[in-house]
Structures are given as structure tokens and as C-alpha cells.
Length: 477
Image 1 (cartoon, rainbow, N blue to C red):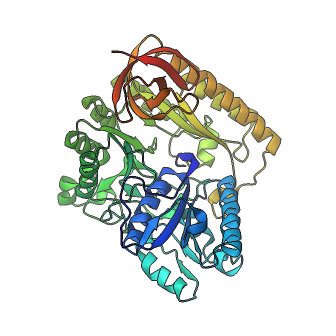
Image 2: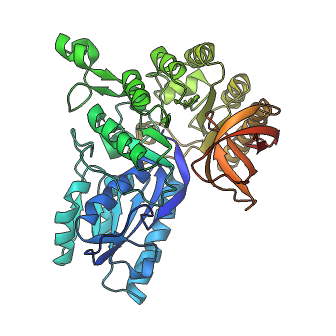
Image 3: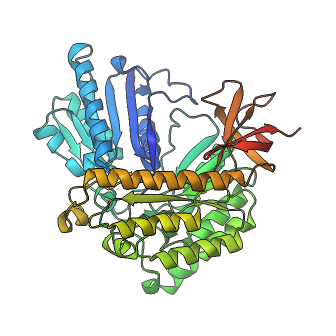
């Protein structure tokens, strides 16, 4: 399951001047994983060529799009509430407004939005964004429009994204799409299709352009970045059956990471999300080789029980996971690690739960993303297993996991107290307008007095104290 972002992004592209000849206005919101946020930037770019500038004012929009997530039921319910809001504005204020659903929820529910619920004008799956001009023409002609066909080729590598709500410092760069891992709990293979990798030349070109416009950090993005493998296009191939020529010219994730770090040595490089079964020792060595590759790995484990991992169809055991983590620390002793954890998977026993807490205590993750199991229609888990863990039990176990993570997070942040760490200033602190907020290369948040620094600066900060998730310090002059 890919890491999700518990926020939304809406509206205006802040780092570009609106095109003078564009007369139509687009309001776009994104929910869920980082890939959705990246996809919305692709959509804004495509629609910019169709006469749309973005807006943050819902009521004035000619076209409203919501980019959706289907990982959890809560995410879908949030989107439905937003659709109710859009339709209320359309009914009461702006009857010419058109409403569309993008992304994984569109792929999963398809025509239901149009035929049964009649709450949108357009449904567009994550591989169909280039068809938006045709779909818009259908809508403007008074017809419903839908395209949810999954592609075996599309990577949008030829589109330069419009950076939405950017701080001009951090940017997402998609390198793969889709997923071939059939975890029983996950809808991603059904909503985003098979894995395919993007041409490394186009990736490097996008990153070079970002560096030239002042960006200081990029995150290489995919449902499963470690399985990146470029042969020249199309679906990922089995390396064992590839031709000798293909093997000789193939680019793996570790090789891509090396190329990116070399291309922009002054730019911070991150990546997400990794999968334990595909992560290789070579990646750790490349991370150790380059100072500009952040020493942080997001490595979802999902459970500390081998029995539950097998039911999830995860292709790793707890022992294999720990071996990988220990190898990472052997090569990268300063690295941090974060997790995804699903609580209350069908048949999870109290012992399974205790095994998860024990794994967390052993690894001591810096931070994590923890969720109660949510049955997703169409997945193998939904077809095969009864969602038999009572809600109260899920809630209690989730609190146990959150408490354990808070304890482990405090242990990790405490390691920085009294030390100096480099922080990339990203924004003003939410709690104190006199402080900047940013992250170190371990992806741990730090705050410190503003002084004469500005967003985008790399600042050496001495850490004086901490919470379980935040470092508190002062700049070293």
C-alpha cells in the first residue's frame, strides 16, 4: 500500500504566470497518495493547453475536478462529501460548472458515478488524462464522458507538469506507474494497472528543468520505485527472460538513482515508495555514495506477523524484513526508516498484534502511517476473507500501534539532541510564525528561529530539544 498524504491540494498553480489567452478556470483538488498529487499537475498542464488557468475559488470555476483515492473507505467518503459540495455550488451558484472525477476512485466505480448516482459529468481513470480534451468536448456537447481504460504504455513522460500549490522548493517526479504486486488488501493493481517505467532521459530532463528554476529537492515517485526497470518502453519484463541486449542496456532503480544524483549534485534526492521484496543492497550503496541522496527509506512492512503477511500476499517475512533493515544500517548507519502498518486485518489475533508491536520496538521506526484495515471491494481480501475484527478491537489495537510509534519516534528524535543537522527550509512553522520549518536528510521535521534565512536555504541547525516527531533548535552561525 502506498504512503498517503492526509491533506488536500487545490486550485492555483503558484509558480507560473497564468496564460493571458486562457479564459476558462479550473479548480482541482487531490486526495490520497503522492502519485495523485503528481497526476493533478499533469492534468493541469494538459488543460492549460485547452484554455484553462487554475483557480482557488470554487464558485468561479468552469471545470471542477477531484483526483481521488480508493485505498481506504474513509478517503472515498471524503471525496463523496466534496462532490456534494461541488454539486450544491453548481445548483445554487454556477449552473454552467462541469464536475469530473479523476484517479483511482474513478477507475474503480466507473460509470456508477454517471449512471446510478448522476453526480458528475465526467469520469477519467489515471491512464486517460491525455483524452481530457476529447472528454471535455463530449461534456460541452451535453453528453456524459468516461474513459477508464488502463494502459500498458502510458507514463506521461512527455508532459511537463504544472506545479500546483508549490513552495518552489520540493517537487514530485514520477518514474513508474502501476503495480504488479497483488497484495490482497490493495486496489492499486486494479485502479492503476500494470507496472511500467518511464524513460530515464525524460526523468533527467524534468529534474534538470526543476533545478534550473530553483527547486532544491525532488522525490522520485512510484507505487513501487524499487521495481523501476527501463528496457525501452512498455511493461516491465522478467529479467531472466530478457535478451542479452536488453540486459546490457537496461536501467535499474539503483542506476537511475545514481544518474539523478550525478546530474544534480546540489539538489536533494528522495524516493518513495519502496517495497521490501524489491529493495536491493545496490540502492543502499548508491545512497551511501552520494551526499545529496537523503538517508531515509520509507519501507512499508504492513504487519509484524508472518501469518498475516502471508494472508496479505506480501512477498517477505518478518525475518527477511529485519535482515534488509540491518543491511541498510550496516551500509547507512545514519539512515532513518519509516513504515506503513495495517491494523486489524482479517483473522488478526492478539498474538499477531503483539508481534507487530514487537517488530516496531525492534526497528524503532522514525515515523509511520498506520491505518485500521478497510475492506476494499474487488480485492482478493474482500473476496476471500471475512472482515471479522470488531471495530472496537481495531480501534484499540491502532491506538497501541500509534502509542508504540510515538515512543519509537521520540527515541529517534532524541538521537539528534545536542547535534548539528542540515535542514532545508520549506515553510513557516504552523505553531510559531517566528520559526521556519523544514526537514533534515532523515526526513525528520525541525523548527528553528527565522533569523535572516528564507525558504530554500540549507541551514546547519543545532538541536536543543525535541518532541516525538519534531526537532527544535537554532541555526549555527
